Image: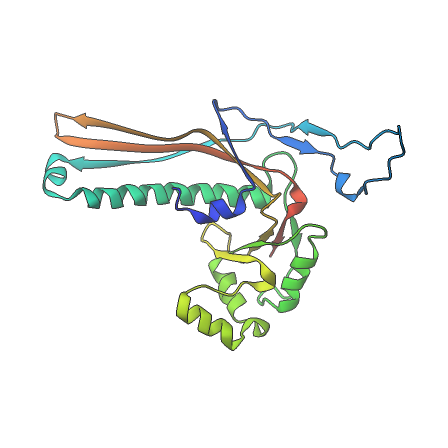
Length: 247
């Protein structure tokens, strides 16, 4: 699960709690537009109010169980079971990424969905669309982009991004040059026809309850061994304006 690098790239903070109830914080919605004023000697300093959100953050328990016979364990190498457990961790990580993307787009239940930037043409992605997405961030920085598979294909066809060096770098290293300086990730967790732009420093908080739990037991009557891997996590938006959706 630690190998899910996309979650690490989009979460500004990770909070460990003991329990299932968590209420995140929110600030004044217009505080960012208020410039810090000059404070005279002995004068009052302007305030920024931080308060608890009205709705609790929803935590979800994700998990998988690996069941193996005594014979499979006895006659196979442990390395193969390590790979199987890695795959379980990867599945849980992908599911948590889907939860994170849902919060980025629709909000965490506290009336904070992402602002949407409309495509100029519904069936085509242009460089101007990317500029509109970048320009909608204001004082924030668009330093991470999450794209669906179909939008990634359209992104690769944008003429302004088809620089010869871009193709050579992709063929040599498998790494795509990132548009407008943002790290670019493609994932099936992003809905079709959608690109999410965000400022990873301020956008998302990951809340975990108890970390990763791994338990083992044996079923003697059928000679099976089981390993259950579970994780409880949820996501909260920190500053809603740090996330925009191009669709």
